[in-house]
Image 1 (cartoon, rainbow, N blue to C red):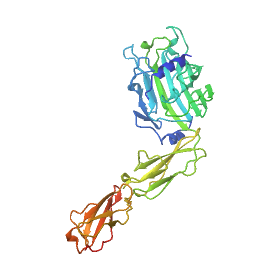
Image 2 (image 1 turned 90 degrees about the vertical axis):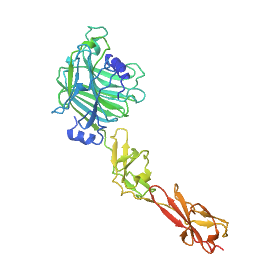
Image 3 (image 1 turned 90 degrees about the horizontal axis):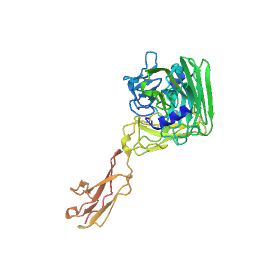
Image 4 (image 1 turned 120 degrees about the horizontal axis):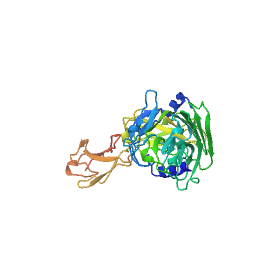
Length: 441
């Protein structure tokens, strides 16, 4: 109960945002997340520097997260430089959205010796924007939650598996949490398999799930969180809940040896192809191929590797900005219980200028001095800008650049015609001449 209560209070205020090594690296390199404070185990991570909950005094220091060291380990520390103002440590993945799959971490810490007021959050996913509440999954969290309701009361340190599914409900109703006793094992390995409607938690004494199984928890049902934009967090902090003496905790540290994530069931995902002419104004079509039955597909078009804003349909009309570039499309497939997969097409040929469509113009009006002739351009490619030039027996007439032309005495004995020129960004300029009129009498 103490675990659930403090978790609810602390995290309601905080909205900061044994697989093989080969399998892990292959899975994560496609999406390590935006660059953060450091790179570790195939992902980018951000050290917490902002204040706030769940640390009871809201104080955190990025310097309390060190590493990775020569062994590839990351260390979290609680410092207390004045003896009465402890400072917490946290880091989180910059990637948002992991989803179904297997999560694992190995840590060095005798959790049974944890100070009563110190909370060790050894791995949890957290999405503060997920409906209806936290959508928080705790692979393992440990504390005595302050030692009890009154200072001096001795509560044992316990560990917990579980998740929050509705922050609007009280503990026991809005969360599903299982507590279990600690051992003095100096190394613990925690593993979690997240599937649709089911989460399996395991905590082992030792490395790589080879030691004694301390606890296996299987939680199932409609309240199991569904993937959204969750991030991975590791934190070490001090709680002011449940009594205790949080201000005077001694420095404390935990070493995290590794982290791995292997997505769920792989999707059948072919490399997409693109059909269409690589010219401005032409329509390109993404052909995704045959994916696992029931897969939902989304699209994103790219120009020389940069995502094109708003280009998220299976078809894309090439714009003027695409001229001189190469276009690709990424197709992303999602299906409940499967690993989200993205495949990218080969680039198109370099996009060339488009070809304007423009008919031969006609001229209407009476051939007599003082009469007005009108150029009729016909229907051109949408968005084309038209300009005009009138000619007298093949010679351009000075300043005769309007759609209409008034016949003057100099035109007698000559023929007249008009040239219509169409321009549009990204297209080759096109000029069309009308037929010559009869001789002006």
